[in-house]
Image 1 (cartoon, one colour):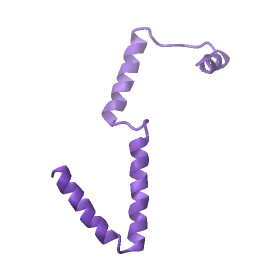
Image 2 (cartoon, helix red, strand yellow; image 1 turned 60 degrees about the vertical axis):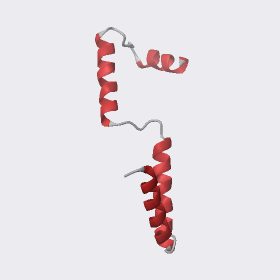
Image 3 (cartoon, one colour; image 1 turned 135 degrees about the vertical axis):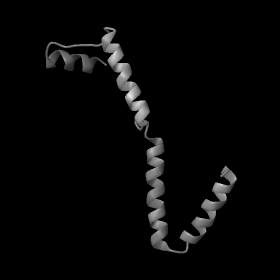
Image 4 (cartoon, one colour; image 1 turned 90 degrees about the horizontal axis):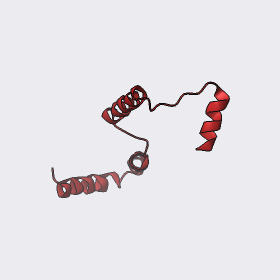
Amino acid sequence: MTAIEMNAEILRNMSIIAEDENLLKRAAKYLRKLVAEKEDATLMTKDEFFRMIDDAKQDIADGKGRSFSNADEMNAWLKSL
């Protein structure tokens, strides 16, 4: 389905929804949720998540990790960021 066809389908469906206030409210709520998800920079796919885990494991294996002897040392480092 092309973008033009999808836009036409969305507009057809919206014209039907616009006639029912309850459906319109539900659609608006769902669209706000979609926009929030799109704008959330922390969202990632499972593949991206597991790639980050693998990269972190490799960094630790390469000696690039950071360790702390106590919580105060860790907190001091975090505050310095």
